[in-house]
Length: 112
Length: 114
Image 1 (cartoon, rainbow over the protein chains, first blue to last red):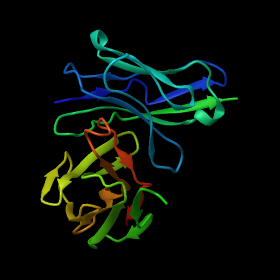
Image 2: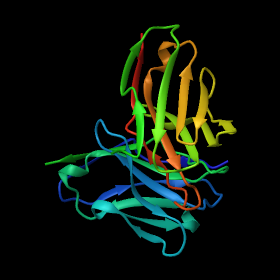
Image 3: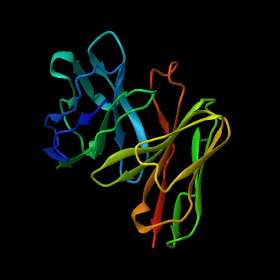
Image 4: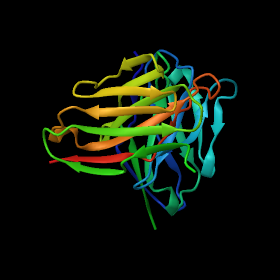
């Protein structure tokens, strides 16, 4: 069965610094990989997704993620953090039976 | 108008009460899902449905039941609520193939069981 690990339940960066949120999935290659974002007191919205083709995926708000099959990873990055990026981020590989398996989330804090 | 709506948005109830959370969608998707979110645990799947006659248990279905009244409506029931069911509940929909697995989420229902 598919599983996912997000390293770091809390990440804190300074405004303008690089954002790196880590995600590793289990050894079975998922057909799809997602990052969702949850802003305070809101639902989840799609940040970006990998399906097929190019392994570097660009999403909204300047985020991108790279699918690395050899490392079973799908880390999320943004070159320069903004205060508005403060949120909780969830990595979600597709599991079997048309389901997503969500990581436990990483809460990003951006300091002025 | 929102594509996926949930009612109520907030609910406080007492232990032992029966409660129903409702989800409606206008996206025309056949796949619908119920999750609960707890701090530090991410989202966990309770039930999912591929159509009106196809309902499946997720990883944490004990204490919950569901009803798919129509393609657009999927309700979650707690027959006898208990305090550890206090959580944020999300409904999601998907047209798995057309949307390449993407799920679309409702705004959530915050449930408190006293």
